[in-house]
Length: 272
Image (cartoon, rainbow, N blue to C red; front, side, top):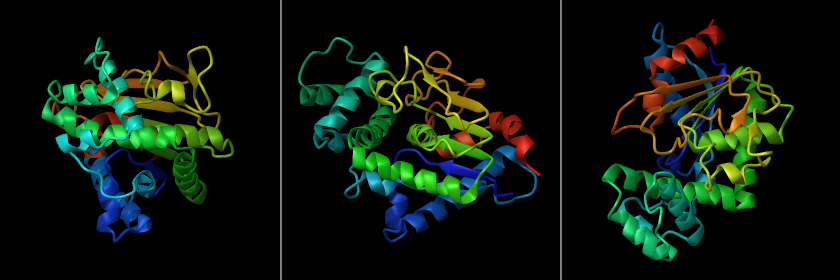
């Protein structure tokens, strides 16, 4: 079976570099890994689950991104703003009124190492996607082309990939998918993602893309990207919400989500 298209999340630029600056090579390396991860959840005979993992991380970078504390000092203003608004979703810095650079320096003293490492990847990539129209379109084109090429029954979108997939499916209503499975999605994150979505939410609600028959959202209870974990309050057309407990340290990776037993009942109907 190869009836699934994946859409990756943040922090995947290293695949591009390892593949000799090849998006095709990066996509294939990710597909092989995602097949192994999903097999952990579904078991049985090893097989090809994914037709392709749509790859776009290279479109959001001008070079190898810095990680860790030093990355915050170099963040451009849009990424700093994303960081501020994300932190406020965590109730960190709720009353802080200083300048962005002052805030990001102060924030370092409040975040644990896992959150700081996550933020150093999350803020620049989300900002690049949401504030640069040309990059946004190119990312959507990569996802559109993968879906159009393979005509999958299922799209599995992780992290920022759920935002790209959501907007791509809306922008291309001819793309029909039987199941959209979002994992660790920040789609409902206020002041960071939700209000910037295209199409814009109407009366405070987004909607399931018209070409999607069924939408399942799965989020770890400690995932600091999936805020809020439950999308029902922000979107109509979410058929199933599941909150899982993956790992208090490894709370957001595709490996943990794709290996989660919660996926089995949703994907089993699409297996031969």
